[in-house]
Image 1: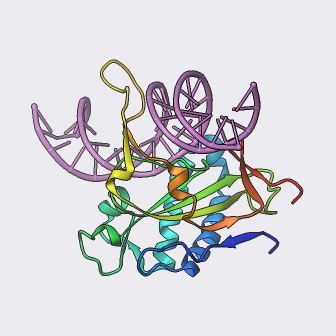
Image 2 (image 1 turned 60 degrees about the horizontal axis):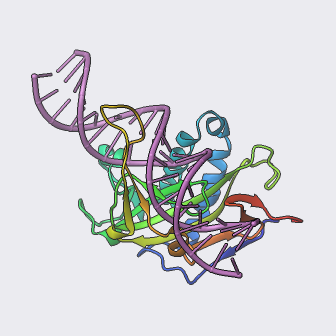
Length: 202
DNA sequence: GCACATTATGGCGTTACTCA
DNA sequence: TGAGTAACGCCATAATGTGC
């Protein structure tokens, strides 16, 4: 493998989560999602949701975190994952949320739950120029413990008068909060002009 | 003044629950 | 049983803020 990558041992991980589990998860998500790029081209938001789901699925398989046994909860309630044996209403330290985004820093959610978050930053490369045979590349993975007040309410103009998105919560100062939380980082991909691009000359 | 990050606001998708 | 509501999953872009 020729990819240039960096693993940062200094990032705090939630109890029981290992770097090995994250490594396997990255491989799994990249492989599975590469086969679904058509969805990205069709509708990016749906693809991104699927990326998050793949992330949760991988961590369920490779770590001590697991999806809720109650399928209703697993499908739509916080958290995506909980530590094995942490019970029905796990404390924030045992909650793990899997999120995927193609944006460099920003993080949006529909809820302001406290807990651990794993963020899969991905890049879609239909020409497969960065990784031959692979059209989806995870270029950074952040692991961070967030509190309720790290989230800022972002209102919505949607209402009786007309459409719009439903309200969201956005992470305050994402770049500052996440800068040193990257447990994994590709060195041959960087942020330029607020966009993700392959580094020149690689 | 430029480059970049952040904020605000526009959009779309699914599924489950509640209640008339 | 069907409509409305609420919960979840996101992206894009223009305007504004900030640091060099």
